[in-house]
Length: 266
Ligand SMILES: [Zn+2]
Image 1 (cartoon, rainbow, N blue to C red):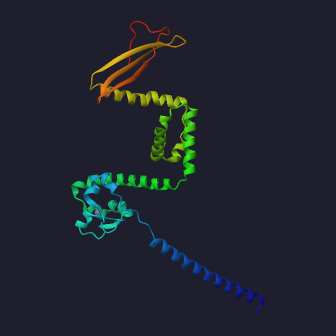
Image 2 (cartoon, helix red, strand yellow; image 1 turned 90 degrees about the vertical axis):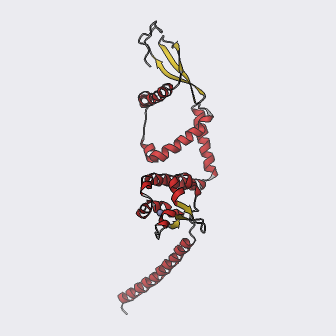
């Protein structure tokens, strides 16, 4: 055998050994996949969905024989083959044309809303599952970060839970990328407060006082430079609670304190 042929034969034998080893690997992977799929943990049916929307209460029930499965009463009544399945696939089921076809025509309008509510519910639950995996040490560090922020900005500790839920809502609504890309200066924040938010808040106060008796109170003050301000408060009772709200701070055109006959614009 020439040197070249020897080398080819050696390569072929090496390839064959590699092939065998790959086949072995594939077969072992297959076994692993089979093992994983056979030991797959399906999510247990969560009865909280009955509080989400009447669609679930009326058309879906838990399979009494298997805590991970649902029964679609609407599809069962229509003798559909897919009237039962794992809870993990319930969202796919209620989105399916087959399910849509099974529910009464007068209930079709509610379907999109039920799907949206269930989808949001599943997202929340998945997030909670992931949250369980976070180490206690990390959560403690996060608490220290929030407390440091409150101390640094002299904010009351009672704001902690509001700030955290605000952050959660913003991340849920806009995503982390949008928050990273957003920039805002003092003047932008001030403009938004003045032109958008304060108008909305004022509108809601005016809406409330249009339905109940109310009292206005005014208080004038001036700063070190002699610039006068007139504060306007409104006090009223709403749902047995006394509400006292600042509705406007008026700057007069004159810089020498409040003049008689001050014209008020609220
Ligand atoms: Zn169905």
